[in-house]
Every structure is written in C-alpha cells, then in structure tokens.
Image 1 (cartoon, rainbow, N blue to C red):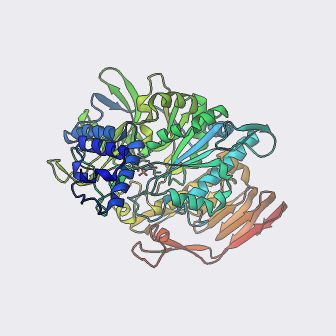
Image 2 (tube, rainbow, N blue to C red):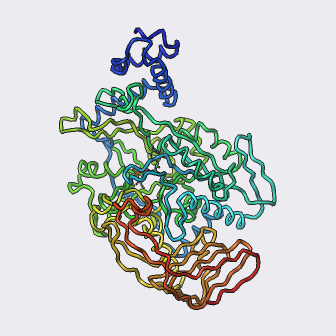
Image 3 (cartoon, rainbow, N blue to C red):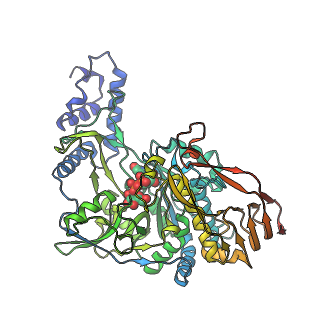
Length: 615
Ligand code: UPG
C-alpha cells in the first residue's frame, strides 16, 4: 500500500487484480518506497505484458489454471467419456505408383502453399546450448537444419513453378496485397518461423549472417511467441523468479501459440487474397521431413482434407503422440493426437489393461504423430475467426509426492498445435497419412545419456540417430532407384548402436521426389558401405558410377555434369568422440563422432556448360 504513489493508475488496477486473484505473496517482500523503485516499476511492466499477451488477461489465465490443476490433482482423465480406437487413414509406400502420383500432385500444389516452422522451444531434453535449427542435419556437408529447410522450400518453389507455367507472386510483407505478374522469377512460397524469447535473437542472427540461406528476406517472417507465468501450487500462485524477486518466472506456453499468432498477424488473410490454399506446419529438427512433404500435400489435395497430419508407425512408449479415433458416449467422434504421456492412462482406463503396448506388428496400433500438419487455408481461417486461434490448454505438474499438494518445480499452462482439430465441427475433413518411418521422421530431441537408455528397438531421437537416419534414407532411396548400395554396419556412438550406411547426402535442388532421383541416376551404379557422396548442385547425373571412398561434387545451376567411372580412395572415416569430452565442439560431442576427411575426390563446376567426370 505504501508503494502506491510509485504506480500509474493502470498499474494500480493490475495490482488490485493480482490481489483479488490471490497473488498477495508477490508483494510481501516489497520494501518501503525509495528502495528498489525501478525494479518495482519493471515488475508492473512485466505484469502488463503477461496480461495483454494472454486472451482474457492474467485473471483468466489464473482461473483456467485453477480448474486444470484441480482436475489434475483429482486425476481426472482429460478424455473423460471418450473411448479410443485405431483410426483408418491413408497409408503410403515409398516409390510405388500412387506415391509417385501423390508426389507429383504435391509439387504442383506447392505454389499455393505457405510453410510455418515452430521453433520457439529450447529443446530442454537435448540440453544443447544453441538453438536447435542451427545444429547440423548431418556432418558430411555440415548443412544446418534451417539451411536445409530453406533450401527445400526454395527447391519446391522452383519445381512447382516449372510444373505450373506462368504465375509469379511478388511478396511484400506489409503491403495490402501481393502482386501477381507473369514471367520473371518463380512464385515465392512464404515461410514463417515462430520463435520465442529463448530463440528469437539467435534465429534472426543465423538468418542474417547467412543471407537467409538464399531466400528472399521478404519471404521470411518471424513471429515471436510470449511466455506465460509459472505457477507454484494448486491454487495457481504465480511463481517468483528465484534469481530476482521482482520478476515473475515464465515458461513457454507451447507450440499451440502458433495459431493465435498467425491469426493476429494478419498473414492468413494476406495469403488467402494471394490465392494460397495450404499451410504446412513443421518442427525444428526432423532431417527427413521434406522427403515426405510432397506426397503428404498430394494426399491433402487429392482427398481434399481440411486437416492432414503426417504419421509414422509408432513404437509403444515412444515419446511421440498417438493418433486415435475418440468416440464419446454421446456419439461424437474425432480423430486426434493423444499425447505420449496420456495415451497409456487413457488406454488403461478404457478397457485396454496393458496400456500402451505393441501389437503383433511390433508397433503400437496407434500411428505416431510427427506433428507435420497440413491445413487447408479457407476452413482454417473460418475456424480461427471463431476461436481467435485459442487452443485447449493443459497442465502437467510434476508432484513431489502422491499427496499431489506440492510441485517439484513450478509449472504452467501449455497448449499444442496438433490440438487444433478439437474445436472443429463434425463436418470437417480431418485425415492423416502414414509413411515409412525411415523416410519421414528422425528428430533430435534426446541428450546422449537419455538416448542410450531408450528401450532396445525404440528409436533414440538423438543427434546420432538423426544424422544416421539421413544417410539411411538417402541410401534406401538410391537403392530403390537401382543403385547397388552395400548393407550398413552396426556401430556404437555415445552408447547407442546404430546402422551406419554410406554417407550419402544431396541438396534439395538435386532431388525432392523419387521421380527426381530416378531421373538423375542411370546405368549400373554402386556405392560401398564406407563411402561418402556429397551432391552439391542440381544438374548432376550419376551414370555407371562405382564409388568406394569419398566423392564431393559442387556445381552451379547452369552446369550439367555427368559423373561416372570408378572412384576409389581412403574416404572419410568416423571417429568416436565421447559426449563428456569437452574439448570437442558441442554439436560434435552430442552425436558421438567426428568425420576425419582422410581422402576424397572433390570437383567443382563454377561455369555454365556440359561436363563429364569420368573417374
Ligand atoms: N515449440 C515452440 N514453442 C514452445 C514449445 C515448443 O515453438 O513453447 C516447438 C519446438 O521448438 C519444436 C516443436 O515445438 O519445434 C515441438 O516441441 P518438442 O519439445 O520437440 O515436442 P514434443 O514434446 O517432443 O512433442 C511434439 C508433439 C507430439 C509429437 C512430437 C513429434 O507434441 O505429439 O508426437 O512432437 O516430434
């Protein structure tokens, strides 16, 4: 009360609201006026931000938190009244006729698409100190995730505009409407990145210091999500930051924020006016994702799905959500992700006494959600106009003991982007598409120690497995295209046993689809297990190539290079690095190996023209 004279009328109102909402502990330690006055004002600046960035303000946040915390304490099942069953969706097999058809349709549709990357998470389970999108996707080329994503979008943009003759869209953010012209450069696919205070500055710096990896800076838009207040107990007392008593502790609200941010940014309507039809959401570290994107969009367009989630076969207890059909006692049904920590209790409560277990296929009967969502823009805008982009929240406190009266550390409300379909009307066309796991999903989420503890047979989701998955997928695709690729060997890095395939990596502009790969490979090609192949160019054709060693080809767009003959050298060798070895860079340590580039054949074609490399 003595401090009132320091505050503006608005701040006094906020203070009253906090007292009414049972938050008097926030002020208990406040000294007399004259001491820490600046910090007291800064405290109210933060309260004002927390209040304005949450729909309905802090009071609404605290009320929702109380309800959800009471439900959690009572052990209430968030799916009360719903019975899960295995849904049916589209299941694709890489390389067969329908897959190739879906890929072609998908590439064609790309000119009507926008991409949204949610990258506000710090990746606490990985424990990496940088931002995750700056990590190398694989270390043969050293390309980081963000570069790979941007190059993939640019390659899709080019490929789509080659298929669909004519239109060019010149994006200028902030202008009322974009300009459609004929000729010139291809229609530019908008790319939004959701960041948070944890990732924003470093994401921007990564883009700026690398000239946006070749993308037009006006094509990229960063939207920063705000954090929400942490909660100390079951009555939702806001948590004070242990390092500064004038600061309320905050944590991310979850990737579900992406919907309200997109909605309030005004971008969705801008996109609609420009004739776009699809919004594709994806996550920070999945080095395989763009191999699955064209076919998945092809499915959306062919089946006219309003919502299409990409899924892969899921191992029981794997830390990915399960897609389930939920049928309510009153007859309502929905096809929705059930998060990995909720699937087992839900199954046990609804007649599956063993919970989350594998079936006879060796996988969970519920497809695993990889959180690659494709939404049709029109119905999406219609829905967000009703909800403002608000997504159902949940709370996940870690209790100290079974009495559930206190928490191990503060908690907060969260929301997930894949919960978007929960509010859709029954008429909405919600589907999902299952793809081979080797093709579509290899995230980097677990630190080496935790990855090594993953039950045998389940994926590690580590930096080690993430890189090896890229080589395996590329090797398998080449095999399918007729290349003789040697079998992998098993090796252990950071306590994880992985298949080591030849280190094959290519730029997205070399091949996006299976048809692209088959058009670039001919004759009798072979690659030995110890080989490395880095294809860094678009018009590079492998003809009767026999590779036993390392081969790196760089070429500019107008150079057409035929590569054949026999390449044999000592190659690039993987050397073990222990994750505890602090003398190695963090991104090397967490994958457990470094590449020793002993010997290679590297050729660079900087000039336009036709070339032939006959080794
Ligand atoms: N993220 C944000 N903001 C946040 C939290 C996370 O942008 O406040 C981003 C994060 O950067 C990442 C993505 O969201 O790109 C997913 O975060 P992550 O911690 O990797 O998610 P998980 O808890 O592993 O689970 C998500 C889905 C789950 C799905 C799985 C697939 O919730 O259903 O199976 O991803 O990888």
